[in-house]
Length: 410
Image 1 (tube, rainbow, N blue to C red):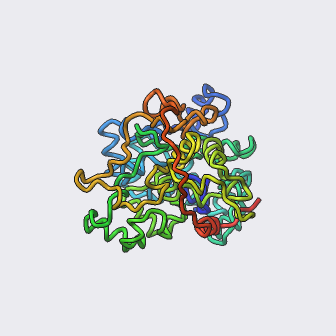
Image 2: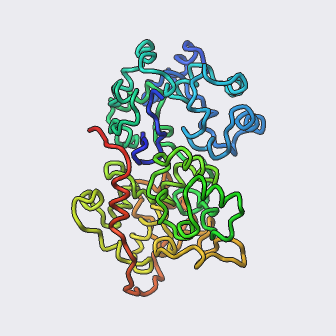
Image 3: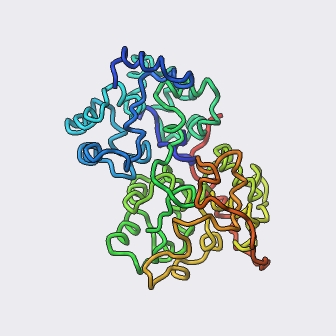
């Protein structure tokens, strides 16, 4: 579960930090074998997208527990989820109870015992689960010492069967381990397009400029030129506390930041899996190049968008690039001032014909079948001629991205 080193969308857990058992056991007896090792029945309300909650539940989620729609639709980033049951305020506990949580289901499914000390976990017999994921008391009590278990940089599909059982013991399963994005997304991008970030500096209101400047360290120049801010070299979970709060204030969350701002540049090679690995390899990367072991970059890095093949464009789209971002064009150059919005790429409509998502037919595309993304037809026909132009690549960007984060223990 990706921690602060980079990977995907895992909460930055240092991992220290509703149903009675009998009923839960009865329910679990009817669950598939893969789920049978979960200690409690899943609180299905927490895995329901915000827009599908009834109005009463939405009010409880917001007014009593302090969630926003974005933090509800993404696991592990709401402040309330960092608290164990006994640390909740009376109002928060009341809200959790109204949603059907008990102390057991909250501590396990929501907090994952992150707010407990190692000694408390030993008394509860829970350390075996963390140890099964590579944790030790030293990691738990010194989360900033630069070392974390390698499982924190793995997706669910990369865990061994024993590691999955250990994760089950602290109420992780595929969706919450991989931090499934529950936000509605009708676009052909893997996550919702953060259009608020594609406004020039002079089009931002004073509140947004203050957040961008004072909390995230942006200047007008770094805001208008995507990819040049130091913050954007980091994953969401690797941002400083204030920077992450600023990113959330702007409207970002783990998935949208890592994809549209960082483009997964700060991920370790071992963190790539399924469709992300397909995308990276389709663009010509291998582990040696990605980790800076050789002084080479793939040919795709020297192409502008029009020169990419349909397969390469599909790979770049999975990494949340579109033409203007790939070609490193300043926002004011392509922003539609008359319309007051980004119009070069829209959230709806069909997949462009020169983007061939069939490269993801085996792995799926951000959890979807390629044919379920955008319109039903996506063919790589009617392509324009190549311009043989080149895109500027700075190897220092990759070096900086790869230098960010902690050291994985293998």
